[in-house]
Amino acid sequence: MSRYDLRTWLSQASGAGLLLRLDGADRDLEIGAASQLNYRRDTPAALLFDDIKGYPPGYRVLTGSMAGPASLGLTLGLGSGLDDAALLSRLRGLPAQWLAAVPDFAPVTATDAPVLANVMRGGIDLERFPSPLWHEEDGGRYIGTGCAVITRDPSTGSLNVGAYRMQVQDDGASATINIEQGKHGAQHVREWFAREKRAPVAVSLGHHPVFLIVAGTEVPRGVSELDYAGAILGEPVGVVVGEETGLPFPAESEIVIEGWLEPGDTRPEGPFGEWTGYYSGGVTQVLNLRPTRLYFRDDPILLGAPPGKPPHDYSYMRSVMKSAMITDALAATGLPGLRGVWAHEAGGGRSLIIVSLDQQYAGHSRQAGYLAAQHPSAAYMNRIVITVDADINPRRLDEVMWAASTRCDPGTDIEIMRQTWGSRVDPLYTGGPRYNSRVLIDACTPYDRLDSFPPVATASAASLSAVAQRWPQLGGVTNG
Image (cartoon, rainbow, N blue to C red; front, side, top):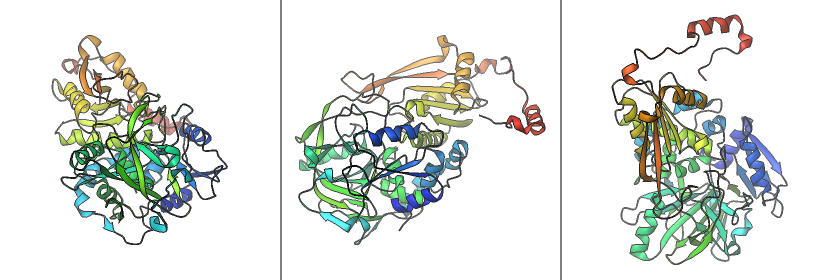
């Protein structure tokens, strides 16, 4: 098995003590509730549910695959012994390196693959898999939460892999795909509709978590997430070319469906417990996929990544990946003095971004805030950007809010940006164009008072270090 095989990942996670097996759960709410309890543990595990009520043994569901630094480090090939700070440090610069390496990791086509163990060309019933009812008020069962939806640009042939939720419809005969309008996959679908009156789609429903990472982060349009996944793992992804659509999908996926979207074929979809922490999307008409091919391995594993009130399944992953990508993006603009970025889980890894920097000129902190608020790597559903000085740890909200409470004058240091990129899942969205507003809070020391601002009342680093060495039971010195 390759490095990008989910079963390889499970073996590694088990060996590192990161995997917890739970037997006998009901797909109605119990899997979702158990997963939610797990996300709130100090050290979340990866949960593998087996012997699910009403399903054969071996038909499994995996959640929590990247809910903490150890499992995320394992997924990215960086090791499972990292904490938050070490993981983010190791990631610094890596997204740019992976992007630059993409041309060297084009997928390799396979004619024989584990996912071809079972191939169905008719009579497809998605109810054969234990799609959970994740939240009590969900409008149905969601087979796709940790999924990877594959589309192709009809003009250029470039591929996109996106994480778009999928609700089981028509008693298992179909599934809706909820794609936000601005996403690359939605752009592909619209172009196919204009050309061919239908759009080909392939969906992987179980796979190595790296495919969820690349599907759920902003990879530039025109760059295939399959290539990007290969660059992360240092190994080209083996793919199978679908019989029906010609779209490639990972050869070691657990479950894959192929089919077509058509403009008039929609179903009511939702509500669903969103990453914002609310059932905020309501019920809308969403494009419906009718599977024409179904491929699955023996004893298949469905990868679940249910959102909800943070922390949820992928909020930690998104926080870390977005933080690394925004850091690299801001550095690439030439912004000097950048010390760190953290996209907080409390904001779903999108809506609350803290930027730490060494101020070097008047307007520097405000410039950093504007760049972070609107750079493509951070613009979607961003709501609050706070800039802080280098002495503030952006990962510590207590430090950030202390700075905001003592270094920010609301009359001069808070600005509002209007009609920015929002989403229909925003609990404040009430219809019409999907705008939102965002606030920029400059919580840096006023530049003209850098030399005269009151000093911080804290012991020196040398004093703290000396005391920590004398009385190690105090826990030593940390930067938060």
